Length: 388
Image (cartoon, rainbow, N blue to C red; front, side, top):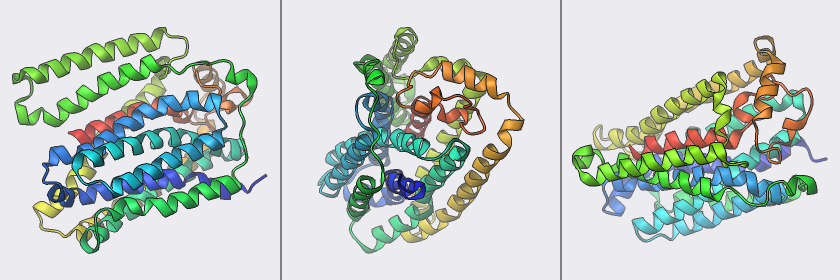
């Protein structure tokens, strides 16, 4: 079997690139605004469109993993990300850049959950808390190097280099996955349990999110609900999200398992993640603009000013996961958490460890029993923060 640490490095390449891209783009926003002669609201769709399709791709990843080798799914998501990065490099106007970012988001949405599945299957149960901590720290590398890297590119090179750097790194990631990650075929019995993805649920989710994000983007410019079109957007959102919730609660194989939110501990964690996502995303989007437009910082200086907080986040995340791994078993009822959460997990194919005996919160924190479903809400709030 391949060395688990080499496998971890191989599969986290995509997550690291996605995180770097997001933080680099925040620094580049004022420059891109001038390049494309666009307003800040229009430029924000480069990030908002990307995050919207990340939300769409995550529920779809469960179905994909039920029907295809997870190694191939990981490679496929990374390949889509690389192709989309190439399209971003050659974009000549804002609309083409937004469309390329939308495609990039679809690849990321499928890639991120599958990477965690591979890590779960690679590391033994006692080390899975550590594995998720490593994954989180890898993602935090993006905010650590992204702002400074973005500032240097904007000040000393062409903006398209922001996306071009993904290509060689992504190709190296593809080769490492091919070389070091073992095949992970799907069992025939598991494959036969779900023939079709919940496309109706995914479509309803998209129908709800797009008018919400569009409303947040244009509301303050058009006097919010004094404008009839904004009222229509709100009504469409309310109708679509109501239909989405009703459909997901009634369908046998939902795209997003809403019933798991009945657990107060889990739903409280998701609420805190929701609020944190709005605060963090909005701050990281606005701060570079404030520094460059109001304080007169160069892109490089603004990037350097944002680097220290990433080291704070990295340290906190590392400590937090070690705390969960070492002490969670003494403060929770293992049997209750595992029984309740696992009975409500609808993606046994995507989370095969959920069928193992002895699974508990100390090695499987609640947020990762159903990563696809929980992170759908987290990415929704991040998209809302970016749009606002």
